[in-house]
Length: 244
Length: 267
Image (tube, rainbow over the protein chains, first blue to last red):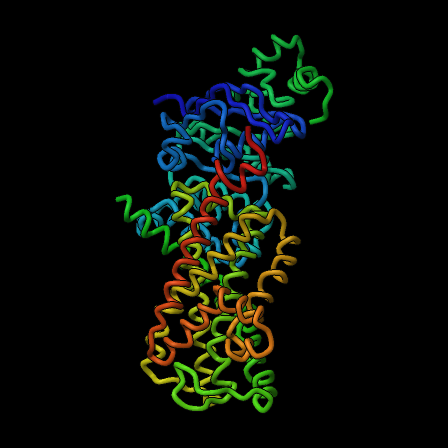
C-alpha cells in the first residue's frame, strides 16, 4: 500500500473550543511532510489523535489501511513516534530503554539486539549504548529516541518538534538523517516544526492554522498559490501574521 | 504470536520497574525505613500501653510488635501502590507514559502489567522487611512466609489498582500530594493495621464500622492470617471484590474514549 496515513474530516474540540476543524490529508510512503503552524494551531492535538492518546468522535484516521479506532493494535504497530518532550527513562541505559521499547512491540530478544545495533550504528550511538540516558546531551537523547521509534520498523514516523532546544549541528544531523530515512526506507514522515530552515526542497508542506488546513502540497505549488517567493512569506500570509 | 507479544511486553514492563527500583537506592531504603521506624519506635513505645487479648489467628498472648507487623506489611504495599501511581502521574506529565500508551497493546493489558510490576516491587520490599523483623524476634511459622505470597499478590494488586484509579483522575502531580493525605492516612489509621477491631469498638462504634468496611483492613487481615498459615475467607473475598471494582474503574478512567482523555477534550 502506497498511502501510509489518511485522515478524513477529522474534528476535535476542547469543550466548546474547536482545536481541529474538518481536517483531511494523506501521506504516502517515502514522503516527508512538514507540518507548520503557529502555537495553538492544533498540531499537538492532531498528533495526540493519530497516536490515540485522544479519541476522536468525528472523522477517520487510517494508518496503512487500518482504522486507528477499530484496528488500533495493527495501526499503532506501524507507527513510530518522537514526542516533543523526552520520553526516555533517565535512570536506565540506552540499551535498557531500547529493549523496553522492543518488548512493548513484542520483538524477540535476539531480533531486538540486532535491530538496536543497526539503528544505533546508523546514528553513531552504538558506542554509548551502556551509558545512562541522563549522561547524554540533548542531541544524543534525540538520536536515541529516533532509533527507538524505528526499532519496530514503522511505516509512518511522527516527529513533534524534535529539534527544539538543540544546537545547530545536532539539528542539522537529525534533519538530514530523517530525510535520508524517508528516501532509503520508503518511510512516511510527518514532522511538526516551527523552523523553516528544516524544510528540504522536495518536502511536502502542510500549513495548519486555527484547526484548519490552510495549504497542502509541494513547496512550488504553495508558493504559487499564495503568490509569494519564500516559504516564510507564504507561511506568514497563510496564517495572517500569527507568529510561528 | 499475539500471546508472545503480550508475554514479552508484560516482562518488559515488570523488568523495567524492577530495574528502576534497584537503581533508585534511596527509594529502596526509604521504603524500608518507614515501616521499621513504626516497628522499632512506635510499636516498642506502645507495647506497654496497649494490651492485646487472644484473637485469631494468634493462639496466645502476643506482643504489640507482633500484632502490628502484618499492618506494616500492608503499609508497605499501600505506600508502594500509591508511589507507583505517583510515578504514573509523573510519567504522564513528563511524557514517558506516552510511549507505553502508544504501543500496540490494549490499555487494560498495559495497566494490568503496570500493576503486576508495582506488586512485584512491593513483594520484594515486604520480604526484606520481614527478614529484618525476623532478627528482631518477630517470627511467624516458616510455612507462613510461603502462604503469605498469594495474599501479598492479591493485596498488592488491590492497593495498586486503587492507586491507578486515583491517578486516572489526577491531571497534575501537585494534586496528587493532596490526595495522598486524604487517602493514605485515613485508609491506614482507620484500619486494623494498628489496633484490633474490638479495641476500636470500645472507643467509637463509628470508627469500628469504618475500619470494618475499609478494604485496607481486609487486606491486612488477609495478610495477618496468611502469615500464620490460615485462610481468612471473608477478607479474601472482600479484597478480591475491591480489586475488581478498583481495576475496572481504573481501566475506564484510562480509556481514551471514556475516561481521563474525554475530560481533557473531545467532541
